[in-house]
Image (cartoon, rainbow, N blue to C red; front, side, top):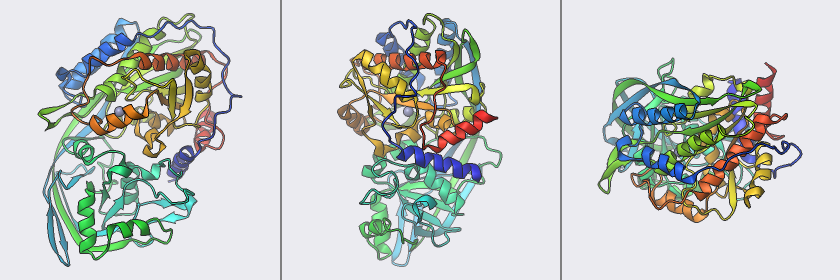
Length: 535
Ligand SMILES: [Zn+2]
């Protein structure tokens, strides 16, 4: 529990601590020669990894075999010490019955996928839920904000909660516009389990989720993975799911309350759970499949301190094969994250040519099952092959810039968290670019990719990319987590190559520097790190 409290405090701090960088901690400039990074080589890897042959790179299938072999063979070809880390996963394919609402004013049957999605982390053949629905606002317990949406017990009930964190008008809590971890769906299900609820249904609203219903539908149907857990998922809430806003509006109406009014109520600190006078029932028939997926790891040994590390991460996996969208059922994940993996590979190749050789070791890890909840990186963080207290920094690439447009700006996601960005701020002007904070802090992106798994354990972690607002909006609307996230031969990798070069230079400076990167003052992750370094 204590770990949880510290962790949660850490999450909140880092999400609200957007201080400008101080330059006092920056590493001294480095005299290493770093060769340029080849954008066309990055593009070549994307084309390969995002090809239909790779079947959308779902963990545990043919696509995994092809993709991980491709990455490992590449590592070997450039002389890295190459190994796989087995990540034991359980895949659950659920056959989901329609969900029935039985209320005072009538019954309603919801259509799976169109009106709701549901799954269970319980490793059981059949999961049957039949319980009362209760509206719990944002589903948040946050003592540090004097916030508690669970003033009445919800034990054995299915909670209905809003997506994101409470967006108070005065922005005085929950990081203002920036999303805190309280806004993440992972948090909502974790909190529902702590409250002893039977299930949790999140009301989808595109504006506050940051993605449309089709993303919900594509992400949470088909085979769902989890790390094999000792308790077989018994500590997780039995039913996890989403309902559309239309369904929620109807549900509230039949209970005699208005959805928008309830939303307003949920922003009041005196909010209490509101019974919806409706029972919900649904049955999930689960097909369980034990499988092992893989993290692919290549190591460039340091010349002086081979037992100290800088670790690069990018997830190689994507959503695999799903329901056809416009006649296409392969979710190729070209930008997300064949592109980040491709950058990882070319950063690795270029790192082998840095002169003189970096003093500390550099680890290049392509991780699995990010799309299933950062599972590969979480498994690594729990079972590190290289001690985390000897790991100076993590740098992560996810869905990088494939458009060649960047306004000469690089966005730091999780701006103000670590001293790594002080180094980045020195490196970028040499490229004629500058560092800026993430322009969409409301998305909570720092909690949505693999650096978060290492940050949770205290490793200073940098997630940055150059991107333009227009490209990002267009991608989110048209391609993110859709079959249309395909390789495009017209892509321009100029910005991705520059980002890769910046990442590599920051890494080389850290690998050669006397100063270990740190969390910035005021972050609780700083305490986690200091605790871990003491041991
Ligand atoms: Zn991704």
